[in-house]
Each structure stands twice: as structure tokens, then as C-alpha cells.
Length: 425
Image 1 (tube, one colour):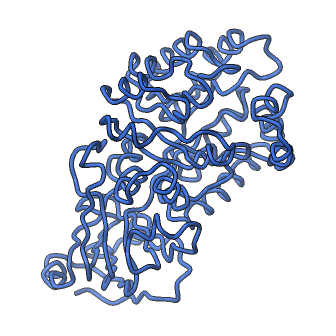
Image 2 (image 1 turned 135 degrees about the vertical axis):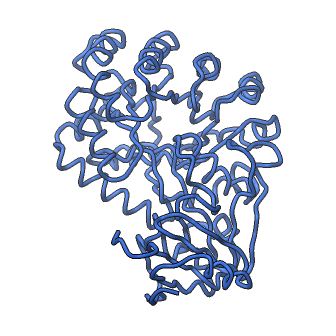
């Protein structure tokens, strides 16, 4: 960013609507989860990558008088602004694909059967180890471009497809270099060179954790039958917490194995999936500070039961939604599509889906200055080519996002040129 007297400003003006989660301390839950502030005929003024003011156009002149510096204007006519979307659960660092497995599942093979036969996660491990660090960096940058075009401005991504020292650390570096928030999913599966999960954890915690903690913001574990049990997950997460990492869990995807009690016990930031969560788990999660991250594209992709979103919200749980973007069980990078699924399949309201994919998702990844259109927040916006912000959930799979702004800069646009740079005012 070029330094200029008064600082650089971006004005998005004449928006049909601006919509943002209405407020309150994150993570939002209960009635606050669905509350949305909507401003019609709106503007957003940004300076040096931060939002300095927003509101109806009638207040723009006063806002400009209080600010100076070179001004770039972006024509928002016919567009709606929402906060840049926050994808808090992806596996965007991988090589290869699993299209052969996709075809086999169409003939009746289950995800568990494919995994037991050496497919699934371990198939991607082989391809990812072979890609090399440069190949992984290219892959994450490519996937990041896909996510941006769907309105995502902040994304988390996990390692976990290396499961050796070199590839796990290379994965975390690639995620950081692409602007993502890295999570060390060191306990994703047991690689074939180890006899069992305990032997693998001995290696991971001794040989990988000391370096991973310098690169990652959080640690994650796949607590599931055939992966890691609750005792092994506790051992892994306890060591990661002692090393300074925030805690996440994959839990209750196929079976209940104690993920929610463990997440509550250890003060995890989230437990993700929850397709198999029953009534007791719903009550426990609602009584805790742990966020339930729901991944409806994964359940749809695998033809599994959807997570009990409505029951969780009604019980008072804090929830977020995410893509679970990965090559095997959710080859979907679009949070806009997931937001549609959250309404049509999880039975959330459009407002709840917006909060779950912005401010609550930001809380999960520890990014407290994104996820809202608010003064002082990062100037991250998704401009929708639609007359109403609710098209985010209404227009399933449509060519919806016109422009993406990150840090007060146009990061991507498919719209005709709408901007004009003018001098100080």
C-alpha cells in the first residue's frame, strides 16, 4: 500500500443495501445470532485497510469532512454489501484429487469402506507428500483464489495430508504464505509407516509439534472410530495446548465418541461436524463456550444425515458454518453455497446463516477484527450482484459475488469497471 498524506481511502457508495450482524459479543447465540442490521442506499468508507464509517448516503458528506487523503470511489449501485465471508474449516492444502472414489461411492461404496481399503485420507497423503513444497504452495494459492471468488476474505486451512515432519511443516508454511490461518491437524489419520495411533502420536508430538507451534494458530484432531480415540485425542490436544496452540476437534461425524465432553473439558474453541450428535451432546454443547461448526456440504457430499442445527440453535448453542473444502468428502470452496444449504437443509434463517459464516466463524479462528461491517474492523467486504442481501442464501450456486474487497483494496471483481480515483477531499 502506498503511503500518502492523510492515508489512502476507499469509498463504496450508493449501495442498494448493506447488511451486517447486528452486534453483541461473539460468539452470537440465541436471538442475537439472527439479528442483522440493514442499511439501504448505503456507503462504506475505508482508510488504510480499516472501516472508518458506514451508513446511509445522506451521512456521507459529514463522514468525508472528517477524513482526508486521496480517495478512490467504487460505484455500488445495484449491489449489496455484506462482511467478507470467513471460512473457519477447510483442508485447502492438498494435492491430487479423489474423483475415482467419488465414482465408486456412486456405485454404493461407503466412505468408511474406502478408507479401510487404503483410500480416503491416506490416498491424499500419498499425493500431497509427492507434491513438494512448491507444489503445495501453488495448490493453496489456487484454492484461495477459488474461495475469494465466492466471497471468502478470511480462511482457515489445516495440514493433515502430510503426516510426516517435512510435509506437515511445508503445508503450514504454504497456508500462511497464501494468507490463511494455519491449523496443525497432526492427528488426522495414522500413516502406514506406523504400527498404531499411539506410536504415531509419539512421533508427531516429539518431532513435529515444536516446529508446528511456530507456524500454526491451532491444533485439530479427528476423534472418530478408525482414527483417534478419546484418550489419544486428549493426549494430543493437551500437549498442543501446553505448547500454546488453540484447540479444535473433528467430532461426531459418523459416531459419537466423546468429542463434545472432551472439547468442553479442555476448553476447545470448537468441535466441528456434529452430524451424529444426539440430545445429550446438544445440551452439553449449549451449556458450554465451545462453538459447534456445522459442515452441511460434507453431509450432502457423503449423503449423510445433516447436523442438528435447529436443535443446537434452539438450545442456545453457538454455531458457525464452513465449507470443509477437501478433495474427498466436500469438494466445495463456496461459503455462499454452504450458506444456502444452511437455510434449506439445516433450517437456519438467512440472518443466522450470515452470522454463522462471518462473526461467529471469525471467533472460531481467533480473528476478532473481521466478520462485521463496523468502525475499526478490517475493510473486508463481499459485494453481491443482487437487490437484496438475502440472495446470499437464496441464490443457490448462482454467479452472485460481483466484487471482493480485502483490507480496503479490490482483491477480485467480475463487474464492469466501477471505480474512479480522485484527489484529496
